[in-house]
View 1 (cartoon, rainbow, N blue to C red):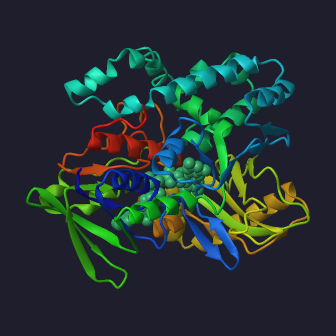
View 2 (cartoon, rainbow, N blue to C red):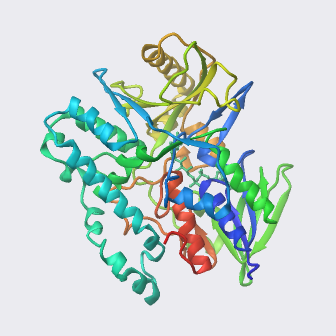
View 3 (spheres, rainbow, N blue to C red):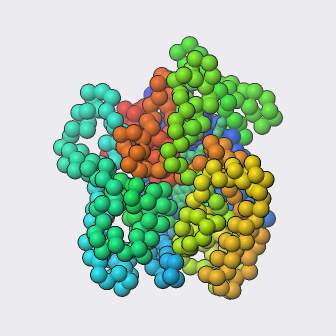
Length: 490
Ligand SMILES: Cc1cc2nc3c(=O)[nH]c(=O)nc-3n(C[C@H](O)[C@H](O)[C@H](O)COP(=O)(O)OP(=O)(O)OC[C@H]3O[C@@H](n4cnc5c(N)ncnc54)[C@H](O)[C@@H]3O)c2cc1C
């Protein structure tokens, strides 16, 4: 029985998953979360009778053998959720509708109608095979990059070696692997690129073919979580507490110091009083740009500020709707060419009509999101036209909603910008969605969980393996596995 003490800085999905796994294995877990609620980028806020997902809105990785399923099964957490047979509707710029069904054959039928000259079956089944192969060796990520003979021996096992050709896909731009029929068809390329942007944060020209497969197949395993995206986050937080751990909300950590052979964190509590606590291990769930800010003096030299390397900010909008018929399916990607909303698509997510925790009967909540350059918003601030740009976005999003979804009464529309995310999640410049996987940020150059300071680790969407709830939960498994000397994903 171990009773090691661990402090986790930040209660995003990475920190919560790690905290719950370690609490389950008898670690004494203390978590400090700066915000009022846990969940970070996948948290929520309330307005009157409505509960809005603030950032993330789609949950995947709950299928058999996938990380969130393993997490819930290990901890015996039952999440009120449903698997979506019809996860998404994609609206191309020419108003063509592409129905994204979870059943790949059904989706391929849709594509065959729209793009009859492409061998859609061969292409999408090729992606599916690559995606399944990658999941099957995910556990090996615990030993990557190898740091010891043991790591090397784990990576040289026949099961892992059999999948070694996958490594090639990790360095091949996806675009090079696309059949000509897709590459030369701007409408098909728009479909691919916009789907990749919401999953891998990169375009086909930048994303490694390996990650592209995961990004394009993820709607096969999309789930709706009743109560919103933070339901699982709150269940993980409750689990830590039930196991004797502590989750302190509105506690901001400001510094980490050495204390003999241990580490000590210092912070500010909700009444603005300082607190401090020592532990054997400290884990930062902050971004790789925020973790260095926790160190002063000599320790600062161990944590140089990394480059931002193409990370995104987000624009979001939130409102409630009321109509005779509820909107279905619950997720819509609307492609647009619009300078104001530069990136090429808006993602509309609706609460389930029976989800009374999020909206009263007859109403639904809507969260809209798209990518943006965080630096532009900094400039708007400096030029004094921040509010004006927010207002233009508010109007434009409402206009697009009313064009695509007819006969709904809408409530007040609130808009979020990188500045909003910086304020509520404390992320550097409001950069969200993780470090995009691209040919520069590949599996060899992606920031590691281990750091130069003994006992101090970093997890979350800007460290390996990165991105999205399923990615950061996988990261939590990899670190918990390293600390406990077992592999949860095999
Ligand atoms: C608009 C948007 C849409 C998205 N859509 C999806 C989606 O549909 N599906 C999906 O899987 N992913 C999506 N993502 C990405 C996903 O939400 C994130 O990758 C993931 O939630 C990140 O989790 P994390 O634990 O790494 O970090 P975070 O969620 O950023 O958590 C870090 C936590 O640390 C806390 N913190 C920060 N500083 C301190 C401090 N000094 N002291 C104490 N606490 C601190 C923060 O308050 C925060 O709670 C989306 C993100 C955004 C912004």
